[in-house]
Length: 208
Ligand SMILES: [Zn+2]
Image (cartoon, rainbow, N blue to C red; front, side, top):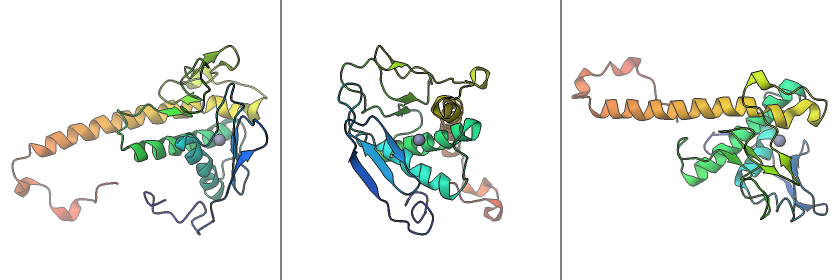
């Protein structure tokens, strides 16, 4: 909230409420429209859903989306809704770890998979479709490109599936921008004199 200068999810100081240990062996977490809810996992496939800071950020971002863009939770707008949550979730993780786009693993829910599950996380933003391939869990169904968009009636029209497409786009852009920023910093460092810089009146404050 500090990083974005935002007063809670609704911009008006909404209290952040979460239910934990929801249900019994519950294998999920969700935003119910008013609060966060986290299951403990069944211990076989999933561990507790509060283990991953990016999953907590993901659920909170659903609240922000609800109060701002209001993306309908179905089909393409639903996949965008899911992707926005993954984006902010992974940025929370990277911010907390002090990582650059290049250093980050871009994994969502890396701490949730129970020991023995063949996979690295719930989702991979860098390589959608590669997060897991396991006898119990199945194979990560996410596409990474619009050419492979999945038409399905399940999962509100594949909101957790097709979110891989904008996730991958965000990852690629963030890594490219990070690299560009690194290069322009290096260039600035070799600038001989500030006297040759453009007039300050036309320069804008650099983004956070
Ligand atoms: Zn979600």
